[in-house]
Image (cartoon, rainbow, N blue to C red; front, side):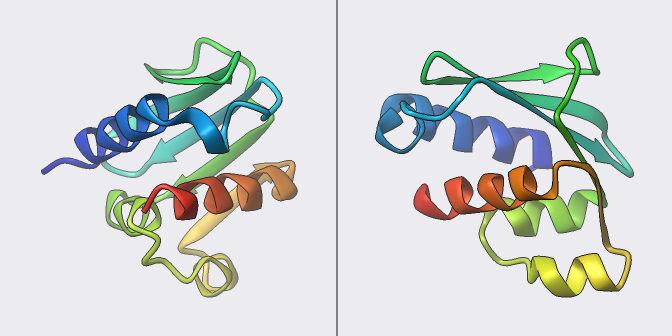
Length: 108
């Protein structure tokens, strides 16, 4: 299964049970994948949407391989180690990247 399909499955779970995201502020997370290109995760009004490309201004940008993003979506990526070794690069608000990881963890 491709990483974008994995992301869409996660988003479906989140929208089906928005209890962990309904009080989140509206945000745009951008994921730049080495193999699959860019996608944005848009949190708005307690819902999540995945958008291809970069139509919105992102508050944080994560740059990583498809493999590492797949691990992140499964809560199987040591983000600290990935960040320190260059397997994960973050531009913008690092705290928001950590918040995204917390949200993903809640939906595992």
